[in-house]
Length: 256
Ligand code: PTJ
Image (cartoon, rainbow, N blue to C red; front, side):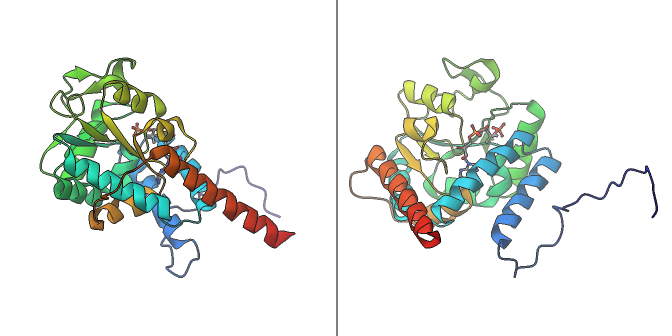
């Protein structure tokens, strides 16, 4: 037996490995890889990896597909953004890593401004995300010269652009923390979120909550027709929870 005290640096799992398309969890692993690369590029925060893990667990319970209530919420969101006077899409480190080209395409199609607005804010990360989005086709992105503050939030998280989030009437804030969603709502804005957790404060606070993985939701919103009927967020969240409960009970039944 060879005994050595040398530290073996090879990681147990190489997240930058080539994932074979035949792998049963190919999409999920590819998505993780994008976030890991986001961290390596200085775009995504380390906490973003943890946030994604929570999202993955909930996505598993949903069935890793866009369910009917999510589709309805996506169509309602498209309607609200198209009808808005001054809509803004807020981009954070996870959004930038997972759907950079798609979020730029969505902002162009729906004529919504893009603003980088971070929870773990650093000027360096803001600049990197702006550069990254420009590489993906964005022309104008707000966020690097904040000149306004969202009332009721502590300093760095409150910073925003007066010609962006501050004066927007409709704001799409995907993968958001509850505080900011609540503060934006208190400012009288229509808040739209994409959040796999139907129980989160953000989901409960938003006017339109899309309970879907952002990697499915944003490409879907690019294609969808706007909703022409009424939308009730509480009712929609209840439908999501019912879907999840039924699915779990079905799985339990298969085991018993
Ligand atoms: O880049 P920053 O600094 O702005 O930070 C971004 C994160 C996401 C780290 C920050 O906003 C944060 O900590 O968010 P929370 O409070 O963890 O909330 C994120 C929510 O998004 C959770 O409810 C997750 O379930 C959900 N979520 C995670 N990944 C996805 C998701 N929802 C949709 N699609 C996903 N891929």
